[in-house]
Image (tube, rainbow, N blue to C red):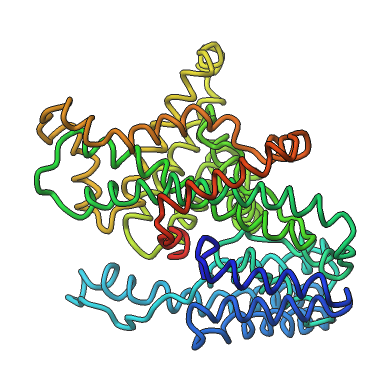
Length: 468
């Protein structure tokens, strides 16, 4: 069920009415039942998966806490974490290891399992690992109410594609819900405004560029340098607007039912370094990788060389988390290498001269690096990645005037995005929702919805991160 699909609006209308009608003490049951229906809409045969993973974490933490000695407690934490990772590793990486890692050695090809990746399994797994490890580190108390842990995992706004939540970010809100009707009007206005921002990004920007990008990645016939450039820069816009648009809609929906979710994006294409980019892009994933992978590996505690190695391992595994393909390994390696280079330059005698370079130059360098490294992320295989990356330099120039005229609309979308990206934040939306007169606010919201519905023709493409 897509946030931008008509069936979701019907589902959420019913859910919101029930949320307002039932007593607060029953609202957790509504979260669990409603979220199960939401997840099962995709494939009811897989609806048991998040419930079983939740039960593993719940019982596993109780088992961990029953350990008499600290070493036993640690071993049990590792065992529970491994058990949670096992289904994700099995369904996501078995075919990759079989065909792409061992295949060239043993002559194997094809797929061993060939099963669809259960929707949201990566996000569910990471959310539960955060709970297990946070309880182990004494950062969060053990939860003995299974329903509350189920609410953390199943809460439908974040269930499919994040944000990846820590227990302290949601469970206290579910345990002590806000009065449904108190300040409901303000929550509705702000939530709807944030949701509308996400709807605009998804239907007006991301989906309108998808076909242009897909055409270049799927065919070679008659492509010019302009086509390749438009696909490369278009995907950079598409993936941001698609994923941050999903997150905006998730945050907006949650706000309307009295729950605050963490910010997941802060204008990442305004970053002046790749390190800053990862502090602004998919924030809940980058901080998860830092806290549950990079720091346990040793972080920066064992010298600079080991720190760079830990950074590279973290980004390689972060790339593999996105997908079982060598293209994702390459994408992670390139980001890991760039982050390591930034740190190495900060330690070098050149850093004084680097700091004197205007920030806008570093912003342009970072944006173009990120944009071109998106190529292997988008490509289905390494040969396609190489073709698209080299396309602007090897394809014929063609008739630029004709190409620009044919692609006037996607080029205009790129220009609109680049000019407005600096103002893409929820604080600005909140100020506008609070200060604009209703005679301006509601027609503006209606205009954006009318534009989105008109351009999308009442349908929406799947969110990119549903595949991860």
